[in-house]
Amino acid sequence: PNYIEIIPLATHKGRSLNALASHYRIAREHTVVIGDYYNDVPMFQAAGLAIAMGNAPLAVREHAHRVTTTNCADGVADALEGLFG
Image (spheres, helix red, strand yellow):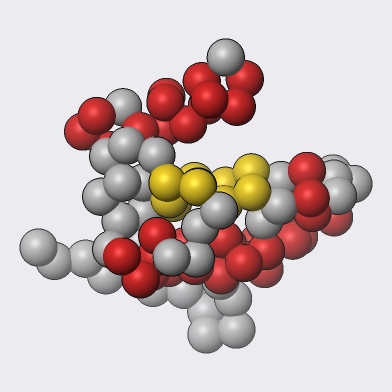
C-alpha cells in the first residue's frame, strides 16, 4: 500500500532507456519495455514496443502498445513468449 521512489527531478525511465539505447547503439524502434505503474509511462513513450502488465492501472495500460497478463499470472513470461516463443 505504500511506495516511494526518489530520483533526481530531471530524470525518468524514458531518459534512461534513451541513454542505454544510445550507448549500445540500439535504434528506438528495436527496444521493448515492460512496466506496470505510472513511473513507467515515460519509458513506454520512449520505447519501440511498450508492454503493460495486466494489473497496471488503466491510465498506464492506455500508454502501452500491448497488455499482457498480471504479475501473478506470469505476465512477463507470457509477454516474452509472445515475442520470442
